[in-house]
Amino acid sequence: MTDRKSPSHAEVLSLALQRPREFRVRLAPGADGQVYVTVDETELWRRRTWRRRTAVADALLAPSLAAACIEDLLGDLVDRESGDVRAMFGVFAPDDDRWPLPTTKEEP
Image: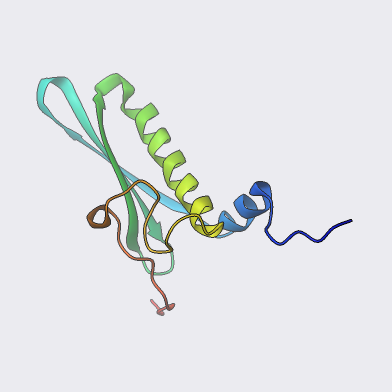
């Protein structure tokens, strides 16, 4: 058996999702029956939002779009853990749409 230098995708996913995650979903009415969907992931121990994904959809599609936003955020976590992106920001987000990951743990 050969030594692997990098973990498999499944191993990276497992490591990335070990911590408990909380997602806050906000829906706001927009023009022409559209709904603005905002999904934030919060650090449970700090209650600080550090990742965000936003989208616009018809009212009937808002729950599905919120679920898709959460999937995008989880994908960003895997990309970050695997070293495919900078540690501070998600893979597709502009720098002003995500907040830096906290570097030290602060007590509540």
